[in-house]
Image (tube, rainbow, N blue to C red; front, top):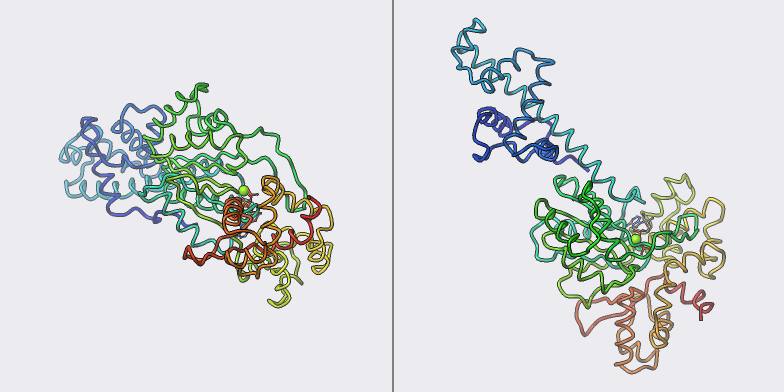
Length: 473
Ligand SMILES: Nc1ncnc2c1ncn2[C@@H]1O[C@H](COP(=O)(O)OP(=O)(O)OP(=O)(O)O)[C@@H](O)[C@H]1O
Ligand SMILES: [Mg+2]
């Protein structure tokens, strides 16, 4: 990600430094320049009484640094602007002509501006590092097929837009967290003055070695959410137990600075119905990015983004990149035709693809694909458990029947009529079941027109339904 600022100070910045020097003794209420700087912000956070005092501290620090290399420059600027000595008096002191003083002064301001610019760069870099530290370590080195999603989400997060709650939904392992993480990282680069908080409601973790881990943290509650936000956004403020007061404190901080919040895996929260009003109470002016396996279509005022499986081209790019990174040279060099079998069995679920590639260190590709299709081996069972178990256990008999009928549709999916013929169910019952299955992201609803909706399952879901699910019934 590139820096948002050029390397050298612009003439405008130099002018701002000059204006700030001239305003050294001005009234604090008169406003001023350099107030937007991160350096100024830091001084305010460190206790400066107002923007004028903060700017003056920034200038002082700059002059101190300047003195270590250009002593005369720093001395000259102090005399002229801090002590208010007239140019002709300075000329006398330096035993020089007045035009020389003007020339030196101009050069000194150039140098001070360059120095402050560099200090500002460092302060921004530090700020970015500290904001990024609030996120979880990124699980990826490169993401494929997400550029359009990233652009859309970044626009929602940064541009003035009516939706303050943004939901990223999709089946397990499809890339919701990675997408949210990458978008927040981009937002931090673009807007380092913003505040950022990341709260995870995740209960389980699946590692790329095929192991399933239960996380020790309890299910996310309103109190836990507010506590986590307070710790990140208002460090040093003692914990506020009463939710209403904690929300008021947080909202007051949102009013001071743009704030971006992310809640990961909302679907595993203790009580989503209880959390949503709290999130609504925090949204606007804060922007909240949610990731959830359960789409929140029933909730008004939410911007929805559904993440579905990667295209074959992107899936193969992921396979090759991961294989190259792991030094699996044969797999990295496999042809599109050879890798087509992978896509047929696994589809475009990045988690499943990455698991499969990791196993190639000890197993042949054909062997791994066979295991996946036959639901053989602990890591395959763990993968299915991680992605499908919670959703499967929520399904009633009707929904299960429809889902089990889905492998009979072609990969591009089937419309309502076709599904009625396959399942033998009435349109009403089928629609109800499909609504639930789409909400849980087990089935994708494709096609723009309402009357031409096609219902499809991911290749991995097909593979899962054909073998694993029988053991859960
Ligand atoms: N577009 C992508 N390109 C490459 N790798 C990806 C992509 N999306 C996700 N991954 C990788 O796939 C794995 C699963 O992604 P991620 O954890 O973001 O899924 P998720 O949708 O948040 O899953 P869950 O519902 O379990 O929280 C991670 O290792 C991640 O780095
Ligand atoms: Mg996730």
